[in-house]
Length: 572
Image (cartoon, rainbow, N blue to C red):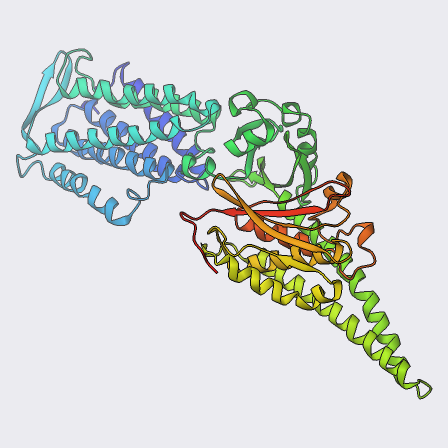
């Protein structure tokens, strides 16, 4: 026992060991969190480093010093390596986490440790070593070799590289967590600076190596960061790429319903910044947030709320957050914008109701006249009349189904190829399709031979012309004269159909282009209110607009616009 030379300073290293072990145990308790397991191994390596230095430095026997020197270097080398492994795992650096990368990074540490194990048989790591008495202390005096400098420079690179990755990731976190940036930076400097001064053989710390003690102070800082900022609970994994880029609103809350963070999507929805909202209770951020707070009472129930200035509809879900022991520590509120979906569902409900109504009447008549045909008491004239009614209403049902199919195709198509349109050909085809209707109404259609070249999708544009022309022939007054034409307006071409009917009141114009919408003046004409609605959808898909210009007594002028091609041409 005479070989031991403990003094008051040795207690600092004992404290360093205890701090490192305490941090390691706390990190291991949180091992379910990504990076916590590696942080526990790192802290254990520091404890081994401190233990090896304590037992080696405060012993005067050369053989014991060499044994504990090997233990010390096992901690030194593994500390720098697992520091980078921890950082790579914590910030989720895909390249550094690859097995091939980790294996390559371990080559120099493994070779260095082999050199330390064999220092009595070669002079690569230490060119010379021996006992040296300084006052009452017997120390191990070493002359560094090339192997030592390679290992030292490599260790500094690992620590500096890991520090850069960590600080960069923490800096990308919200303001509430960004405050730990300074503390972590100080902890890293406390580790690097004293070690560098010791390696350079400055006399600032006398004969003692301050690095294990500096690790103890750094460990205390990290412990404070873990408790204060929940360093290992809040992982900055791909924060910019994932959290900030998600379009939906995301709000992170703690167990006291205080906001820990929110992404730009949530900032936009709630019209506030995360810097202002973080730390406040959810219900205190805005009036609508009281509804969000209600979601916390029943996490399994999906709620829909109107939020924001535009009063859009959001589906709100809560995903609970638990710690490694399964205890609740907060939750993640996700706000999905379902306004368009809700409108679409409402539209489908309207469609279903209207289609059912429009099909029910013809079907009822078909059923009644079918039963009537089975009677033997009908005269030939009555039988012919029944057949005509069945034929008429069957055709009406077919028209409804055809227009619904057209509407379905327009809705389903995400995009069509725009081409130059032979508008003269399309108009002639549309007029031909309505020839029978024109004869019935004793109407005439006038249109120019030359049309400017527009861009669009010919099959859809023909449906627009057919709808416009059929309306003009039906409601354009007795013996309607229907005029077709166009005007170039900037980069758009305005195509129009004008009739000489009674015209439309302003209130009636607002009802047009809505699904299943019919005017009172149209009740005596066959139809079901889908034509103009389909025309509006088609033109909207093609980048244009629809509208009507009319005054009572002066007819109506229905128009639609399409993008203009580069040149005009005679497309007769």
